[in-house]
Image (cartoon, rainbow, N blue to C red; front, side, top):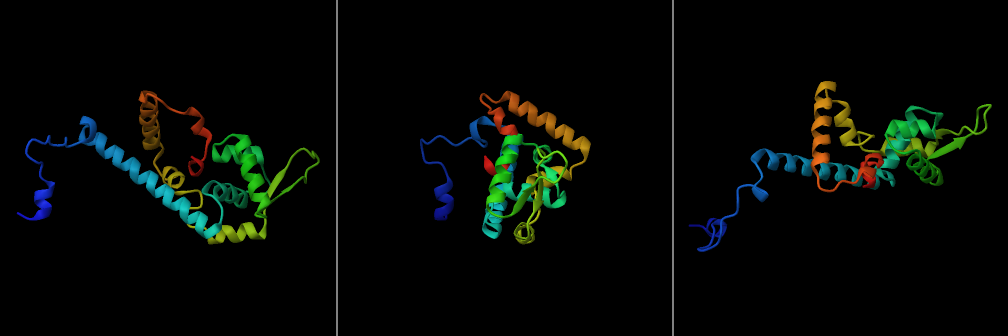
Length: 177
């Protein structure tokens, strides 16, 4: 018997490990493994964004929305990204400080701030790995609406059954968790 095979066998008197962690079903184990793939893939994408562009994944997403909708207001940016307006304002502040977007008051109502990409912002978008909004939002946007509704019901059920959940994370970009 080879050493690797012998090493993988339980020792005399040792209790064999269950086939699935904590007595989980095969389906629960598969779901857990899929979540791991999703989280690791998203983290790798965010790392690649930072390496190529020097900004976070959430900053890239915000900048992408501004590039696609020049003149957008902060509240509309927040709605587009499904985040709190204060989160969007912070992203705008960071991007403006880096010279990637500019704020302008171009309407008759001087309280309204509109957002525009700068040339440097356009260049950052050109360097960025695709999809620009992130791999998870992109994948979700491509699901059939009925399947997405089913996924939402199942995820809601998981969140409700968790012993502890942080509901404030609902409005935090994945890149910032």
